[in-house]
Amino acid sequence: MSTSPEEEHPVKAFGWAARDPSGHLSPFNFSRRSTGEEDVRFKVLYCGVCHSDLHSIKNDWGFSMYPLLPGHEIVGEVTEVGSKVKKVKVGDKVGVGCLVGACHSCESCSDDLENYCPKLILTYSSVYHDGTVTYGGYSDHMVANERYIIRFPDNMPLDGGAPLLCAGITVYSPLKYFGLDEPGKHIGIVGLGGLGHVAVKFAKAFGAKVTVISTSPSKKEEALRNLGADSFLVSRDQEQMQAAAGTLHGIIDTVSAVHPILPLLGLLKTHGKLILVGAPDKPLELPVFPLISGRKIVAGSGIGGMKETQEMIDFAAKHNITADIEVISTDYLNTAMERLAKNDVRYRFVIDIGNTLAATKP
Ligand code: NAP
Ligand code: ZN
Ligand code: ZN
Image: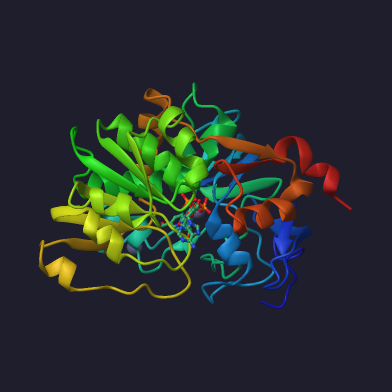
């Protein structure tokens, strides 16, 4: 495409984008398409800051496209709907997560698993059907096909609910799919960050016993008292880890960096399942003997389909599950990214786009 991001579409838009792998974010003028007949346009009010946004602005995974405008935990208020839209109307509170498109004809799409469509289109740094690059939620408004619009339940706070659109579904989906949602299961959650802390809440809501496995002893009190975890293991403490050997039915591993999985496999019972959702930039070492000796499973899971995302948010609303957040203003974004890289957030930054983005417009 030879036209600039500012001119390729008819509707002016404004947000914060990274221009190169330094990851530095700054004000960015671009444009969005006009509202198509199946499209929903909304004013963005809040957007969560996922560790995937940080991986992406730094090009950790090698497929970032610049300028890169992140954000895939987006909530706001509908301002316009296309003539064929049935799901929502002007004024409704809605969200968009990690996906804005897929082929709608493959096996995965037919099974409501757009997230596993080979042609999936991510909310940012992806190429849309019209050939233009997608831009995420650190921006004044969004437009998306109604299939990718999530209805926000009335009693769900917009700021604390936003992170569920990625962090929530990413942990909810594997808990369900791998049968770790049955009451009485003993579940381990590795990494108490954005994903991990909501995983504790969902697992508890399913009736599980929950053990947090963390590198941060300072998170113990909060995990037990505020998040409702039943026990807490410091992963670097070999004695504690040995004492808990063979106790877990399943583990959701949310760690964002390369880390050893051998100690985690040791925590699993026979037939235990280690589900990897964290996305480190380099491969992990997979020791085979501990798998063979207990018929254990190591698997991965990526976000969730649209139907399940709606189910997850409705479940969360019913069980009063929201993320524990630190609301920030847009001009704090670069500091927030530095803090996220240092594991210094309890437990999710959420940008108050509605009240603070416009003031950063040059
Ligand atoms: P986050 O808030 O930064 O949390 C990650 C947690 O991992 C940290 O709080 C920390 O917990 C632990 N950790 C960090 N560095 C570590 C290290 N070197 N060794 C061991 N533990 C470490 O990140 P997030 O937003 O939850 O995202 C987590 C990962 O999931 C990222 O890689 C992200 O890209 C990925 N992700 C994947 C999907 C998917 O669909 N599969 C969706 C969203 C995000 P403790 O202090 O408790 O150790
Ligand atoms: Zn995410
Ligand atoms: Zn498909």
